[in-house]
Length: 266
Image 1 (spheres, rainbow, N blue to C red):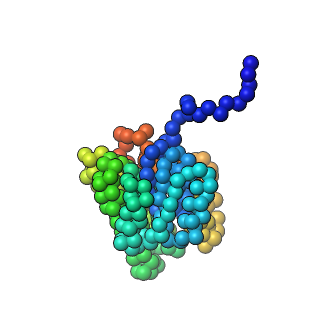
Image 2 (spheres, helix red, strand yellow):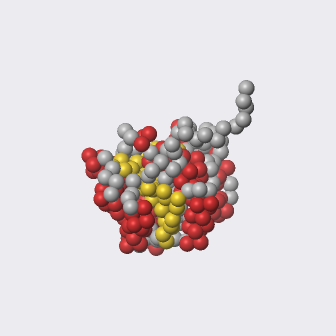
Image 3 (cartoon, rainbow, N blue to C red):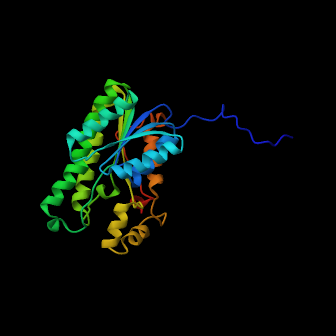
């Protein structure tokens, strides 16, 4: 018997996102960076967007070194013109837009609602809600004008699916993102544009680590409320987004999918 390893890839299944152009916000770190790497491995050409150019360049170069196709655009989600320019950059670079993962977000220090400074509330609104709205409207226009059909996934949070006394502004904006997601799914479904959201539970991102620094033990407390008894790695969240952006979820739209280790079931 010949046990020589084969290098024939002719029967290898194509990637989950093969042939697609995907725009990713918040792509410099955390879930967004993990998603950009994953999407590229799954065959997509990706355009990374975030505020910090050094982070974007590092992730872009990592994807290219691994054989993927990636480029980046500096983009502050609080700046609508910059958001639209970043989406346009994806079309200019790759000639089309098939899908988008709106993951970029910001947070403010935890605390009860009456202790949230107005400036912090306004900032969370500008980035997490208005920025997502601006991205979605630009993405729908780009998909409509190029690919014709496509998919959008927004990052929400399990903190949006009930009262959130610790992060009230963050939870409120993410709940509004859920509403935008459902409204967009109803509006653009007849055109073949699917819109969904994921609601991550505790995930080991810089944002969560910073929360754990100002509220020591919070991650352990959240893990105790999670049936899987651990936090997620960013790529585990990205895997859910990849599926929702792919054609394998072709009959799924208008959903907010918890990716939370069972937290909501407990």
